[in-house]
Image (cartoon, rainbow, N blue to C red; front, side, top):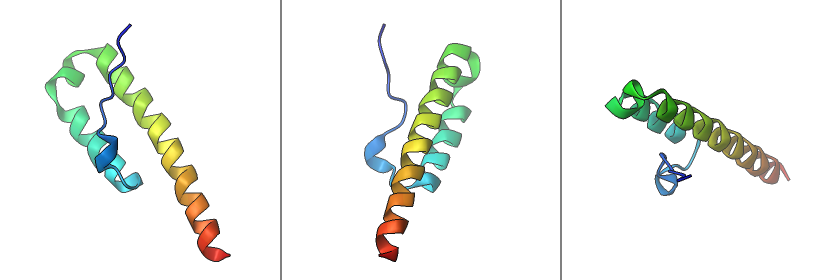
Length: 65
């Protein structure tokens, strides 16, 4: 099974960037016409969103110290 990263992680610095990338991917024809690709993009988005939220929370706590 080949795993494809749909998001360019180097260009994503925060959740806002991730949301913009997700919206752009959802508008592309392969994700519209192929439910498997759509589900993979959704899963990858959810994982990255969770990681970014944790990282942003850590940064907030660190800045409050």
